[in-house]
Length: 329
Image 1 (cartoon, one colour):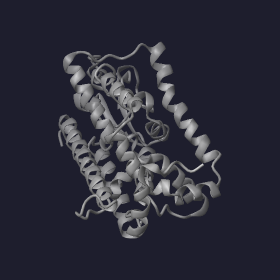
Image 2 (image 1 turned 90 degrees about the vertical axis):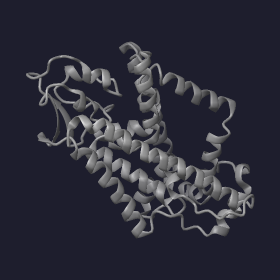
Image 3 (image 1 turned 180 degrees about the horizontal axis):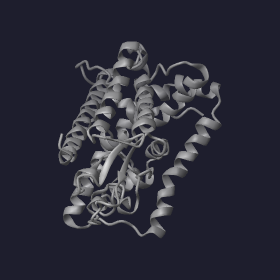
Image 4 (image 1 turned 180 degrees about the vertical axis):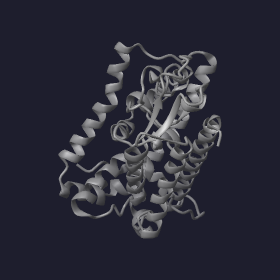
């Protein structure tokens, strides 16, 4: 495979995942309408939407570690979370660079901004404090869930009616956001045309966690200074705004393993993908990303850790209360 085809392949893969997420969201809406009796058209509950519930998945992960019990309310959410963590540990932030639909939307906004020549990188004195925001958010979640939350509290949360309908609450958050939430989302969207990937770069605690795991990943992008012509094409294309031309190895936790830099680099042997310091074909990394992700999905389907096992009547009763259910205290 020609390395210059990697960006087109990546966008095709991202587009496929994004379209599937939109389809799953539509299926969830149809299922909710049927469950509350607003529609006579029966629909299946799409388990994939649970991938948008990372906080619940973090709670489920702590319970799994402490009690060896898999989350039975949103098992797909925990499975996707475990897959993303494994990808981060083994294959850098491959989940962010090749699968995440929010990352895809950010990449599209960055491409438009680059065409319009409106995209810029904040100065270092501002960029570094902004980068710390997502790590502070990650630390907050780790403190509240992994450190403070007891097993009894976890059980109460996971078995609560709130947790049973949290997927629908998430759906309506996007369909009918409050003025504040809508303003924030529009603000982030607008910033995406001016700053490279502001959500992924500054605000996503999920990405922060994967970035920390990626620092010990065996996969790295290496630069050969002897063959570098200092054209800086790699830096201009990098979604994470990494100073690639000044580093021999890209261990930066912001690297999303998109391989855009490898594809655009003019000298063939300047930027290469390595695993345990040995050069490997660039296509191996995304191939392993997709293989590992779908292996988690298939294993979960076979073992019964994907589809929600709750009886439909239980789900209907919870959905009937719907938006009136508040977070358990």
